[in-house]
Image (cartoon, rainbow, N blue to C red; front, side, top):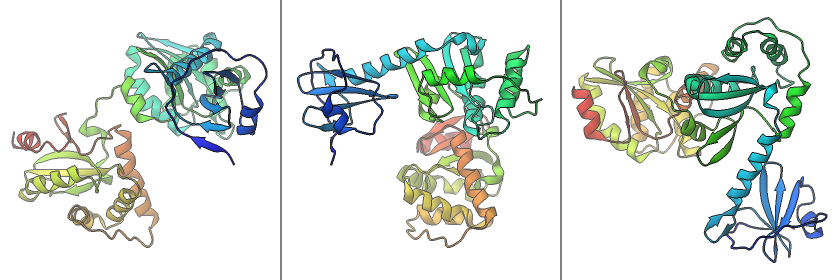
Length: 367
């Protein structure tokens, strides 16, 4: 049986030369091993794909971070790993959009919904700031991805063509050899799209998938009330007064406090709240969200108030296709905003207030 520890260690470093040590191979027999070096007297650093793990001489597998003299040497090695990957790329094969100074290398599939989401929500709104290199990576199970990729590569105005396919517009599908693009992806151990490399102040960061927290730190978005489809919101209020979008979690104690304090504005007609959910408190939050959004539209606000009031039973026996769609679309609207802090209040005039700042919210409503 493998012995696994997660640890913080202080070590001395020196290079390892030769074949893979038997203890490393025995400890992780089915794991791909790209490089091994010995750090300290009893510890091996193992590079495997895009990750680093550690193996002790007595056969422990360490999944964690190693420090030396207060410095995170795991982070240093991962940064070097990313730099090595980037240096292997032939950027001449990428579509180059030079508008700003922040260099980004992106692998995108024009048919992948997550690639399109990254493009729509993060890349395109910030194009003026970017020195962007795009490698199109058509996944084989997306039938039109190759044809759309070839359409872009064959176009004289590649920037315009790229925008068209990433926005989901209909284009003339083309044929071409995409093997050179697939070969570039292998150089960076691509396991899926979207994949971005961002040249930040502290080094090059590898961002895999729709990682909203990391993406938001490099690609700021200005969220507005108009970004939300109110059809899928839980409406609290009559529709009169100030209109406010609320991003919340039904189990968030700060959200409960805000709801209790601000309910009077919905009752008096001074404000109407349009509520969207993000399950920041895990599975119980998900169950509560499903319970609220499975109710008839007219009863959803009441269900939300019940849960804020302490209701514990969120049992839902069956869901219709319409209910399922409403649940998915509501949460999707919240996630697409990139907002993870709950509660967050977004006013029609563009004002955004994060947190249960009751006095500040009341002041904005009373204006």
